Image (cartoon, rainbow, N blue to C red; front, side, top):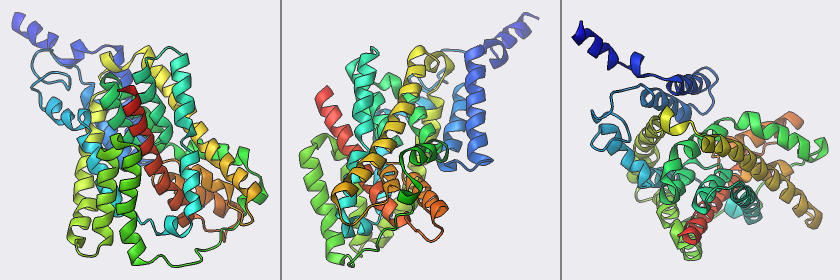
Length: 375
C-alpha cells in the first residue's frame, strides 16, 4: 500500500495544479484553431502540442522538464535561447521570397517602415507600465508581427520572457483575419478600398534581383550590425534562389530546413509555457501590450499610405499599409481579400507581398537597433 501511495503521489494527476489545467486548455485551443479553423496551422499546431507536453506535471529532479539541465527538451530549447532556429527560419524565408514586386515599386518599402511604429509606441508603453528596459524592448518587438524576430531579440535581452512573448507574437500572427480587418475598415473608406494599383511599369531584370540581396545586406547590416544573424541568412537564402546555380540548395532551404526549424521552434516555444513559469502578471501584461502593438502597427501602415496619397499623383490603396507588418504572407493575403471584397477585380496580393517583405526587413533592423541600444 505504501508503494502504491508513493507511485500515485508521483503521477501527473496528483502533481497537477490549476495553472497546468489552464495551459492544457490553451494548448487545446491552439490545436483547435490550427486544425479546425485553419489559422496558421504550421505555427499553431506545433506550439499547441508543445504547450500540452510542457504542462504535463512531473516529479522534479528527473531531468524531464524544459528548464531542467540535461533533459532532452532543455537541449532542444538551446536552438530557441541561442537564436539558432530563428536564423534558420530566415534562411528559408529568403529562399522563398521574390523581391521583384518591391524592386518594381520601391516606394512600397515605405509602408513596411511605417508599420514598425507599433514597436516604438509599445516600447514607451511598456516602460511606462514599469517593465525593465530590456523587457520592454522584447515586448515591443511583438509589434513587428514577426515571430522568429521576437524570439531572437527576447532570447538576447530577456530570456525569461521567451514563452509569453513568443506565444503572444504567434497568436496575433495567427489571428490576423480577426484583428486586421476591423482596423482596416475603420481607417479607410469604401472608395479608398477600391483604389486599383497599376501593374509594375517595368520588368525587373535578373541583374537587379542578383544585386539586391548583396546591396541590401550591406546597407542594412552596416546600419544595424546587430541584425546580421537575421538579415544575413535572409539575403543569403534569397541569393541562393536568384543566382540560378544553387537551385538544389535553395530548394532545401525553403522546404526541409525551414520545416525542421519551424517544427522545433514551435514545439519548444510551446513546451516553455510551464504553468508555474508562464502564468504571471507579466504574461498578462505582455498579451495586452502585444495586442496594442499589433493594432498600432496595422493602423500606422494604413494611415501612412493615406498620407502618401496626399502628396502623390499615383494613388496607393491604403489597405496595403496593413501588409507592412512582417506577418508573411498572412497580412498580404488579408489585404488582398479585403480588396476583393470592395472590388472583385482588384488584385492586391503581389503589391501586398512587396510591403510584407519590406516589413520583414524593417522588423529585423528594428530588432538589431533595440539590441544594440539595450546592450
